[in-house]
Image (cartoon, rainbow, N blue to C red; front, side, top):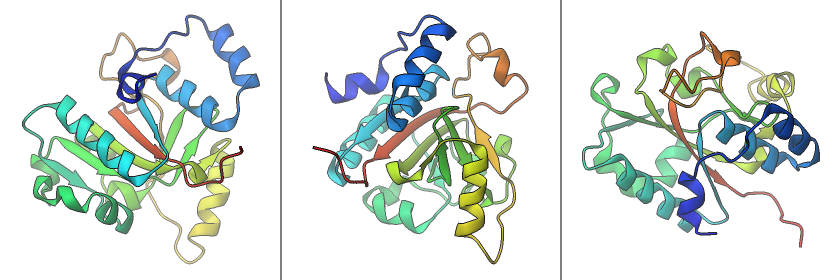
Length: 200
């Protein structure tokens, strides 16, 4: 299937029972992808950094001519998207797209765990409505408790604040699940780079 067509195609799963049955049989990465797209997210899997750049350019084209982007300015983001520096602004309030990495991807929820390192000590509602998240397959964990343990190990000296697991990725209130009622929602594109050995 065409790489970019997979990113923008709709979800074909029709019932919660079908989702549950498929989830039980899927490996972690496929389970995450299915749950994430079911939650309204747009997902693309990449095996090389060159592919990441191709996908990023395609997303920018999809978003339109006027893109003013802010980011969490992490080393990962600066390094991976250095060639797109002219698009960036330090002023979050005037930006319309937010580019960030994340702490973990929660496979059973299809959610993205973020902390103050990604949110820049802001409430998520203060950030642009469109998120582009860059992550790697090694950041996948089964559930929130496993993610919390990982964060404790990652930041033994200073535990980050503002932890949130974003799991509603559409700005259409009619499409938001009742399970996500009252939670923040962002139109989200996830670029996932494979960084683990692939079984032959």
